[in-house]
Image (tube, rainbow, N blue to C red; front, top):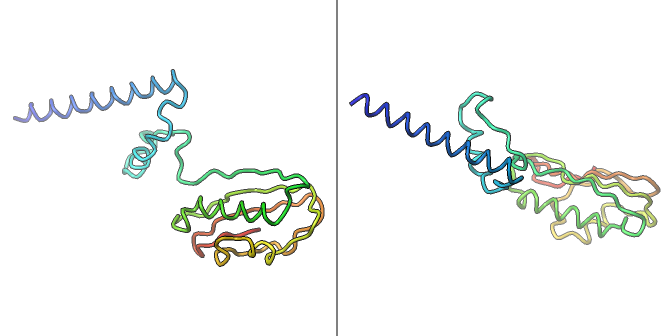
Length: 159
């Protein structure tokens, strides 16, 4: 009886390893074969109490959304474009349900023709009570704004 149970465990382990090797081979032949379809399984594997060596690194599957660097020229360095990026950051945070802090956007503005501040931004935002403005007035040349989601306060911070 013990031999049968041991055989089943061995055969199941071999089958799982074969499937994993097959997927890795396909992923090396066809780049991004697995894509985002295995991200849920990957997150489950990461939560298992396994040594770090047994936790594979799958590119494109991470807990944090990727930070994007945006370069705005003089024509689009407006409060409306910044408020659009703030709204998109709120959507990236799953409408404030994400329990992680992350930077959404790093916005570089070459030249700001018309100075703007928090009042100009909040007037065009969908969720104007979900923003914390820490920049002051944006004016002049070579300005950088960081748009970040703060999970503790459940707000978008503009730094």
